[in-house]
Length: 351
Image (cartoon, rainbow, N blue to C red):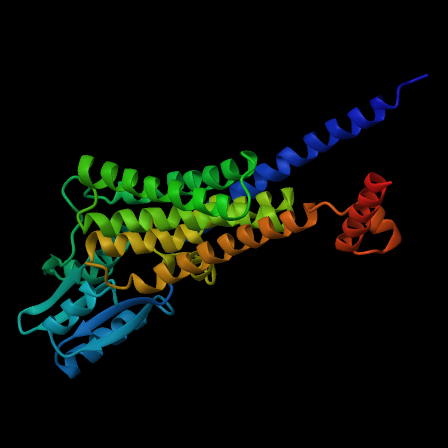
C-alpha cells in the first residue's frame, strides 16, 4: 500500500510549482509597474516674476494636464528659498532677459532633468537658451545620487535581519526591545561612516545622518519583531511585504514620489523605507528641511513595533507562570494551599 507521506509530498510539490510563478509575478509587478508608469503627477514647481509674464508661463506648463502643481513667488530669492526648503523641486524665474530655471538635483536628478527638458525645449526651438542654476547640487563624489538610492535596500535588509535575529535568538519583551535599539544605533553609525566619511556621498550633519540611518533600521526591525509577536509566522511575511518589497518599490527614491502612479507614491512615504529615504535626503543635502514628517512616520513605526514586542513579552511571561495543580483542581487559592500544607507538616512533626 502507498504510504501516507506520498500524497503529502505530492501536494507540497504542486504548491511549490504553483506558488513560485505567483511570487515571481508579484515581485515583477511590485517593482516594474511603478517604473513603467513614471510620469509627473502634481509635481510641485514654482514660477516667479511679474504677473503678466508669469501667467503666460503658468498657462504653458498647464498644458501638461495634471503634471505640475504651480506655486507662485514674487521674485527669484523667494523661489530659491522654497527650493532649498524642499517646498518645490524647482522654479522658473521670469527676467527681462528671459526665463531662468532653478533646479535641485540633490532632491531628485530625474526631476531636475525633466524640468530642464520641459522648460528649455520651447526655447531651443526658437534658438534661445535658458540659463539653469542647480540650487542644491549633489556632491561631486555622487553626482547622480546613486548611493542614496542604492542604500535603501541594504537598510531594509539590515532592519529585517535585526528583527528576525531578535526572534530566533529567543529574545522577548524588554530584552528584545533593547537588542533592537542597540543594534539599530550601531547600524546607524556604520551607515554614516560608510556613506559620509568613506564614500563622501552624503554631506550633511554626520550625527543627523547616523540618527536617520538608525531610526530607519529600528522602524523596520521593530516592525518585523512586532508583527511576528502579534501574528506569528504570517507576521514575518506581512513585514517583508511592507518593508522590503512594497516599501522599496514604492519609495520613489530612484525618481520622486510624484512621478509614481497616483496613490503609490503617497503610500510609499508612509512606509519605513520611503520615509527613511526622504529623511536622509533632507538631512544630507537640505540642512534638515522637510525632515520632520518622515522622521515622525519612522518614529510611529518604531514605537508601534517596540510596544508590541514589549507587551507580547510580558503576556508570555504571565501565561507561563506555574499554578499549583492541587490548588487549580480544587479552586483553592495557592496561598491557602501553601498554608494548609505548612500546617499539616507542623502537625506531623509534633506528632
